[in-house]
Length: 638
Image (cartoon, rainbow, N blue to C red; front, side, top):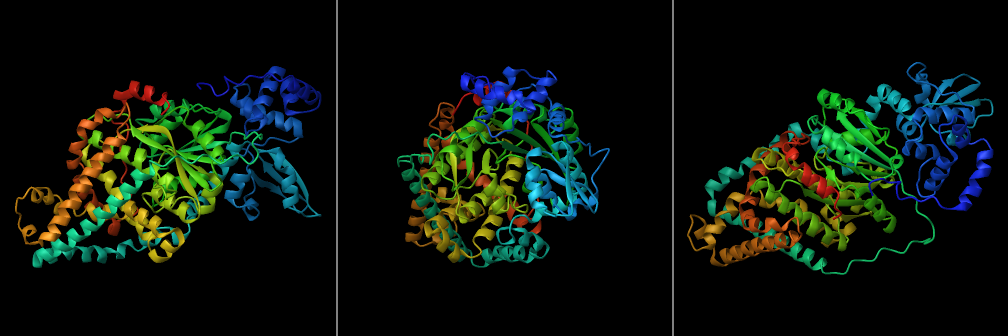
């Protein structure tokens, strides 16, 4: 579907009969016709499109490339006898904040522009809200007048004058009971926790066998839980897929909604042009699409690169004011106030989504229950052949997104969301308090928070292709951020484990624990786990030989069974044409997983020292070498 309107056929003669009376009265179409900006055929086609889209008539004409926003607002002014004002030359009086907070002004599209004792003049972006404002601000002694202002002018004015207020709201919109900000505020005094952990080292020297057995007991318990979890996932995948619920009104046309895509950027000037090309290729009606590039105030290189792109009308740029906290969720919380869509999606700078992905997401939302808050797409990689690490990274993601997440979906369990290619119903996202600005894995945290509040997440097969992290040091930095975020997420959601299990069920609580807590058992203990390979071949090792025989047998059996299960899942996850080339490398992943221990030590240190520090991944390192592969992958449906 290269062009979102190309397949739309305008056939109905009944529409012709309906439109002729409309053209004989004063309408936006007639005003535009009077200027020879459109034809009757254009209006007929736009009318037909509006039957299937949740878009205003003028927006559709803009999306068709027939008129500009300036022409539309001139016509709206003529039609409704309203003056179109420019906030740069005639800004509002600052007392408007006494009547409307900045977030409401952005979402509803109005502020009080001028005020006297007898007259209140509202600046509005949509003439259709005049009656609503008359009812909201009832006063028999005050006359209400209106002027028009273009949405980008209103947003720019509020961003310039109310950024401090919006910035504060971006930090605290997530409820305190569901946020990790308390831990962040106490971080300077949390160093005692790190000190207590360091005491485990001398304890290991004083009682090595006891400490070793205690550590390995944790390993056996974690591996046992992990094994049960994975077996449950494999069995769940054998269940038949639930049929979508029948629509309540089967003959009612469900209009396509407006979709806002948030694209957080930080030091991404090198990849911006390629990102722009990939997002521009998305096949969804442009009047229903809003692509929002978000950059930090001090990131001048990204800013300059963005403004050099000459963006089309459906793309906008949001600058996030500088602050001590600089995280992706904070930036998205801030930018969300400037978005218009009822569906909110997220893409990262290196993303290359399938061109029909947004359309598939909207179709999924249209066929699922109202309790489903978000849709997660598959994350995959376009550069698995770069080296050994990129191959192992791709296998790891294949297991997560092609086996575990589909299984969790079938079991109706909480899904640890990915930070990109995930789409939310905005109403629910706002109700939950958006993202936790202080959590560096805001995606997984939100997936669990949604479930705790009675909502579900689901997935679709449409894939987004990213750049696999193929260098050791950046891989460790990225993985340490993920582990740190899981630690914070565990602190938030397991503060009251008994209460949690009573609310969502014991099995569901254990599934969260398998994904959030077990990594924190296995990764730091990798140095005591690795010798089990040698020990399992009958080679005696110091301290390990002193363990009870029954204990060593249980340890070896659990360890080997878990490794075989990992290989089995990797074999199944790579059962696609584009992944089968990875199967010869499955055995080598045995050397890949232990590297995580290095990341866990870095994460453990930062948890107590700088928990909200965002160790950014560098993007666009070798995607130029895969331009043809990216083009083919994004144009082939999964």
